Amino acid sequence: MRARVWPLAAGVLIAAAALVAVSSLGPSTPPTRAAQAATLAGELRCPDCQGLSVAESRTAAAQAIRAEIVAQLSAGRSADEARQSFVDRYGDWILLRPTAPLVWLVPLLALAGALVLVTTWMLRRRARPVSAPATVDAVTRGRLDEETEALDA
Amino acid sequence: MRPWLRWLILPVLVGPVGWLLFANIGVDPRTIPSQLVGRHLPAFSLATLDGATLTDADLAGRPAVINFWASWCVPCVDEHPVLLDAAARFGGDLRIVGVVYHDTPDAARGWLGRYGDGGWPDLVDDGSLALDFGVTGPPETYFVDAGGVIRHRVVGPLTTVSMAEGLAAIGVGG
Image (cartoon, rainbow over all chains, first blue to last red; front, side, top):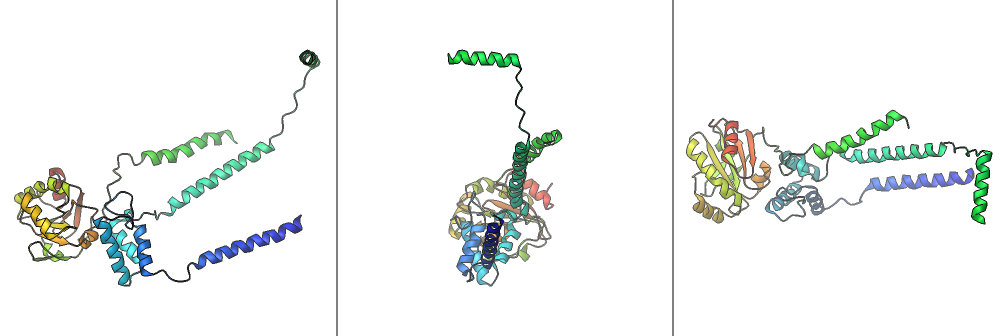
């Protein structure tokens, strides 16, 4: 049994390492300026709409922001610098994705907490001794036998 | 499970959820905090409807009200008398600057002809000044003190009350 487990564990480890290596490499070619602009427009909230990104909206403000993203990237600024320039003027409000790490951590922590709770609860349930069979005294036993026979008859 | 632990579960679960539900009651989800309040007004150099050029340096030394508006903006009609009134009352101590937001000069001139031209300069903005101010949509008004620092912002149509608040923040009237 143990001899079979080790190769399997090694295989899983190698696969996991390969996955991490590949995912950290990212795309081999850097994104084009248009792709960068489109990504950034998708991350910014359209100021004069409800719940739309700059990329999705056709309002004047969204068009102006898209134009400025392109202008900033063309001027040689990075996407991060361009994003920051909008945060400086509109605040974190302009970002559709929350930047606070807590917002991302809380659901994970809640899930981990729930898993721990459920696991301990199930383990305890399993460990609980099965209750001893009830003892039946002779009189009750006799009555039970009689009633069963009466039912069978 | 220990009995005291069981009593802890309810507050631990209900507390944060309750806080999430009730913390933002009374907060208008559409209000956007301004990053510009307390900062120096952004630099600009733009043409006015009259063909002159106005820069941020021209505003130095006098408190100013910068009002973003458009001819297609319905609430701008409602707030216009408030601006005209302020111009009439504080004319000498106060500078009013309109910024025509995503509109054509002709449409803006027509609108002023219909609802009253207060005589203050109106800048024609391609949207970049609005971006620099963090404008979310007209009407939106910024109150700048004599030192060029933005002290107050009103999103939506001005009322006599919000105008008085803004003017008080830049030391006009009161």
